[in-house]
Amino acid sequence: MNIKIRLFAGLAELLNTSVLDFSLDQLPISADQLKISLSSAYPDAASQISVSFFAINEEYATGEMMITADDEVALIPPVSGGDGQKSLIESSSDGMYVITDTPLSIEDVYSKVLNNNHGATLSFVGTTREMTGDKRTVHLEYEAYIPMALSYLERIGTELNTRWPGTLCAISHRIGRVDIQEVSVIIAVSSAHRDICYEASRYAIENLKQSVPIWKKEIWDDGKTWKGVDQQESWDPLSR
Image (spheres, rainbow, N blue to C red):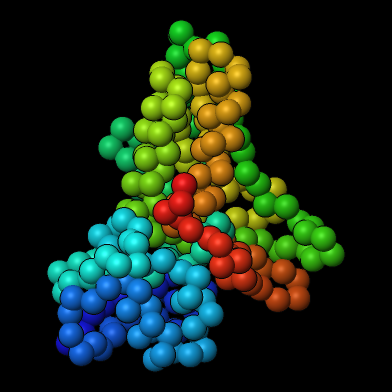
């Protein structure tokens, strides 16, 4: 029997497909067992597979979770850091969380968290830098597992409001090509007091980089690489 596995970023590039039709002797199978089978079938990709996590129905899976024929399965390589083909804007139902391949507006995201009772509003803006050490970046390319990414962005906002009640959060992330000095991500946070605002903003960006399935390809003047491909084996989106 066969199972379809969605692939992203460097894994999709290495295996030359975004949806892998993989043959198995039987289902259900645990996530760890499936990872072993994939590594055996594709030894050239084994190092990337070993540090990746399965997502089952848009949720990160532990190794013992069972995968059935009815599940939507994706193999998520280490995140952080695509190619947009047409104008795309996907958002949460309340519009607070957006993934798009169009330019981002700081004013638009900032306006979503303004509140008469909040004395602090902070915007974090991530942009493409040209030099990283002695390497010169030409541009970046972002790719996302969009429905799962939106769900996890919303989850970050919910966690902020649980940790710091009343805090408002809005996040917009760019996919596709992002040139030097262009904006790739905006996180706007507002709260009653500035200390909470700083803490919540830091929490949001760190958790986005840890768990939201968005990948970045760095295009240099002498090569390219997917950010996260060489990430250490300690990456664990379930640990947060």
